[in-house]
Amino acid sequence: MTQPRADHDGPPEIRVRAPGKVNLGLRVGPREPDGYHPLVTVFQAVSVYEDVVATASDDMTLTVSGPQAHLVPTDGTNLALRAAQALAEYAGIDAGVHLHIEKSVPVAGGMAGGSADAAAALLACDALWGAGLSREQLHELAASLGSDVPFGLVGHTAVGSGRGDVLTPALSRGEYHWVFAVRDSGLSTARVYAEFDAMTGAGAASLGPDSDLELLQALRAGDALALGRALRNDLQPAALELAPELAETLATADDVGALGVIVSGSGPTVAALARSRTHAQAIATALTAAGVADTALTAVGPVPGARLVASPG
Image (cartoon, rainbow, N blue to C red):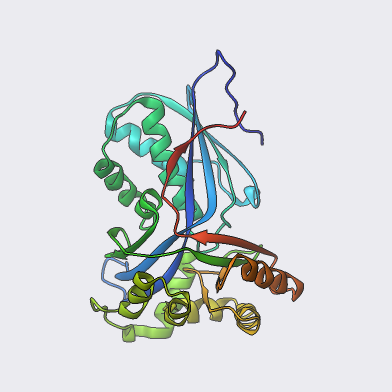
């Protein structure tokens, strides 16, 4: 589908760019009576982006373009549309919007593409409608939409606790080079958590304040080698149980010298930490040549959260 474009006399067009993420550390506690799992996670925003373009409209509608666009719902279940509706209700605004999503983050890939869309939609609609919400109000709305949405607003590197939505900035020095091995078929987050529960039962580890001390020390020092050693994802065994072919992807990245390799979030995207931009390109080439990824993306982190950008053309 084509992006709605504004001519000189047409309606204003607001473009917001939001990043995908990688979980450098993801510790998952036992499921609580409300069905949710307590988390301690270290997020890093990476330079794989979603662009959301908001244009004034009588109704609330959505279109999508880019890789895997056909997999993204365009009805009321879409998180970006839900974000627009939530903001309108919160601010008492009676207005429509057309949202167009230009995708780059893999769909159902464990990199929070849908959450990035929601964060971008909140910022775009706030600007389009002149709602004037504070960052705190936007964060409150974001948290009501999903655990990863607040981080889509904040970006950079942060520690998430609670359900992942309570964020504390993490000190991080330097730039990190990533390769993301993407599969055309996604993994349902709900299925991965269900498998995690089946595998751990009541034996999931309790979460302490120092769960990721080694990882945070590596970030503060800007030490990519130490960061690679400290990567951890409690959901990785469950993702591998549901998609055993990911073991070969992990092994291939390790064989070509990645500093660390991990399933990103609930998967199936595999994240490999590289020494440099050149090394990242070499890992990406090796992954696709070995046939263990349908696509391999390179990126850097950390990067900022959702932000207004100038529309091209």
